[in-house]
Length: 187
Length: 259
Image 1: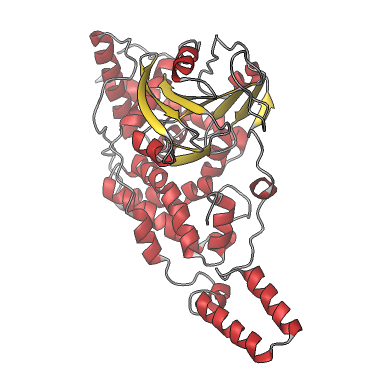
Image 2 (image 1 turned 45 degrees about the vertical axis):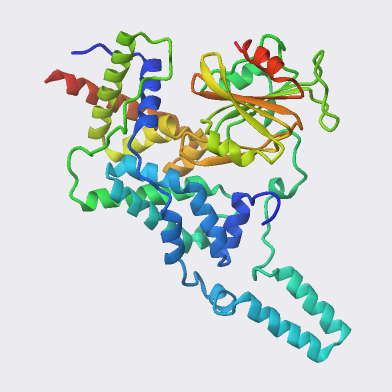
């Protein structure tokens, strides 16, 4: 492996033939994203780590079904997200998840006045509260686009839908987010 | 009822929430997965995988070669070893993009306007250098990225291999000094700088690799194309990178003109 690092397709091909080091390299590459995706779905740190781990193991034993040359990352996300959703359902779905922000540091926009910064922080809390109440299927669509910056093509593969469907999925999820934000303030 | 948040505002707020979530730590996952995939994943690999360790097979073959010592057998065995590699799997077939000669610049060549339509962040152009000669955009890969190439600019030497004087890269991602440190060889100097109110780093002395963290949390590695100095900084949530054979003062001045 001297010189240039191997590209995903090469690592996948090697993994298919039983090279566990190659697969470990893929895990290292995507463990952060897998755990974050699972966290957005489960809202629990432990469940997220378990789901990510389980997803990687399942993906390894499912590599025979992986289409050679296809991008690995969205395929993995599909498996991890399924795993996370199942875990959440198995726990007897509570209406909201315990998703939380680590620290609400001020927005990097230095032009904000103290009042502006307080408003921005309030908006974040309001959006997070709505996110907690959404269906995980909608929440993950929003996360792929706005949290993890996936391209439309990757989103289509990760969600297992036609590329043309991604936009409507996303706008539906946003519409539901807005509904939840309205309910939040109605009471 | 509270007022409706404007679409742009909502999108920005969502990105901010995404940056702040209390994500779990993930560094232990690789080791745990490694331990759990120790059993062979198919019959094929059960035959050729772990149980027959590579060294054993190699030793057996070498015995075979020395036992027969016939030219035919020897060349066949050599070919077998070569084909299978020491890692004991067939040479994988990789797509042309991975094996072909490295493209000087990756991405699809488009106009600046087209690039602006395709990515979800604001592309900025340095006023001091004017309109770029070539614009490349990548949106199919893991994340969106734009490259602006300037072939000739007064006072800036042109790269002999690429015929390019300045390369500007713009993408979503964050800079970490620790990661940048990995990219720097013994002869590379890294200096924190402040640019347009944001933080940045000046890398001097031919760094060749570049690391940054994607919004997904993944660390990405990238190759620097010009054997020159590099200025990197964050501006409005976008990471900007300027590669050119210029001094720090020149680079900072150009960076100050991004609009």
